[in-house]
Image (cartoon, rainbow, N blue to C red):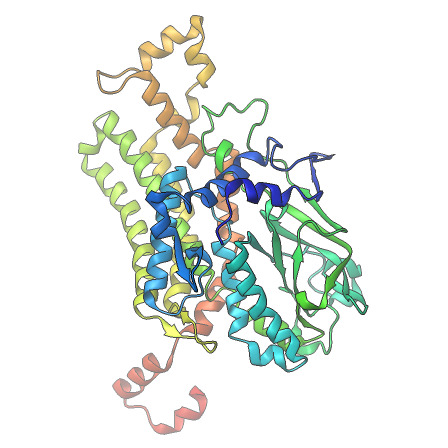
Length: 486
């Protein structure tokens, strides 16, 4: 089934408790901070039903039509189909969005690879993950993933802190488990459900921990409270003409509080199962890192386009020094593309029978894309020039008194009139300099764990045997060292 955009909106008008700027939201679909991004998600649903997109955004199985984004990948074509679908969406909406479902469903696919681990405690739990993956496919559910815990004091185990700092089970009932605690999650306030799982804790040392729980939570369930950060969209002083990205693509995060929330047994994936919690931490992003890094390819395209147009408007694109900086941006973009392409070309079957992007290549690509983004944004700023921070807003261009002067001095020639220049500079400012730009940069650095965890994933997925054997033979080392190598 493919939902319509209106069916999606109706589904999240479920009385959920959402707070923004100290006020409870009456209708998430109409609140000025949430409406733009909800409209983007609704547009994605509607795109899948349009003749020009349907063939690329959907697939048919057992005479039922489903979203390409939610199809578990079993062959390389599945990944190429997802890439094409993302390309359609980004170009149709004219921007970059990250948490719209396809980037988070992969974290449930990772559980498929650990069915034997889940089955150790209770075989029902392993069956639950299969059923929920199928439910997302069949019902076209907007699924997100609740990852980040309130920080607390990481030098102490959770049992020695306020017990609610990490999600935990307070009691069991015939109907299910009761959980308390909190998580941070992007898009939770306007999603259908979230996959909640532990992400902090030395699980190897904690036996039968009440914090070792993984489950599905419906976002409108009684006791679930969404306390959102203030939105960038539709701020009273932020004209959409001046901040075209922030006013359309702000993906609002929330502290999601679970205040004695009932999780039915059929929605539980694991509970009091520390080995399962450890498995989740080590495999969480083996699929979801791909669409996450793919988004950064489009961020790179926006920086290249904004910088190139700014150089072309004044003729600076003819300078070798400018071309060298543009080439740096291109190398960044193509470096991301190379890692993604290689990870699919070298993909391998996972323990659950899915086709998993080659892990070392994918994680190295994530490190490259995330770690180099600040430097690439600085290069793009240099190429766009100081006018992105001194250009007046759209109202000044339209006002009678100031407009005539701004239109005079911002018009370059018959090709570049003031209106196009103002739009380009506003776009570049929102991409590189605004509050929204800073927020997105920080989001990229931490959305899939901090940099040291990214590097740990590379270390753990890389096969060191080749380099070790190469040096052993080249240096003429004896077989005695093999004990130390292992």
